[in-house]
Image (cartoon, rainbow, N blue to C red; front, side, top):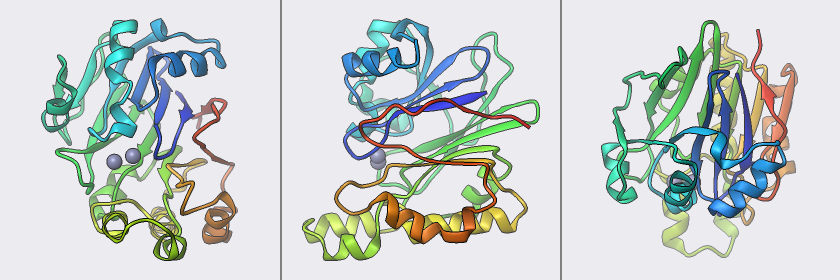
Length: 253
Ligand SMILES: [Zn+2]
Ligand SMILES: [Zn+2]
């Protein structure tokens, strides 16, 4: 299994997971045209997508879902809460209930996360002894999240903001409260604490991809400063960005 970020940040998130049995798109906050353009960097096109999984209904995650579904013909999978906003036919999935796509033995698990959406989930993909996780958009780290995302060899995790930059920045007070709150986004400190908990439980992802980094309230160097020595034992550490398509990250044992 392998994953590649087509773009990540508050203006649009889209991640490809190649399960080995098919190509899955997790969220699409980019337009269909932009998604196609970015996929062509990986020698892929929209018609290669066999399923679209949605995490929640915020526009940076669903903006392009309808158009990509129409153009690719791929079915959409979402929780009932998320599906209300999509206003399209969806395969309804439930948090904590594993499912598999047609003719695939990869087990996909939607994990409930604390975020200010109707019924948000994030996903893990498990195939034999390989496990890959996508974990963006959560306001706090719960024991459940630590348990479910333990054991991932590859993990895309958000490190959204630097608390200090956000607090002293130009965002309106209400937006600051929302982002900082338990249903908002993870700060660099919170992401570091999450990774420490994973490491302390013996689960060290070999490949770490940091995503959903705020342009206004964070920077790659601030994330690096915060993670510090924590990530020194990791095989590969990459930073997803709003503009760039990342190369594939392979999940191997
Ligand atoms: Zn988001
Ligand atoms: Zn969100």
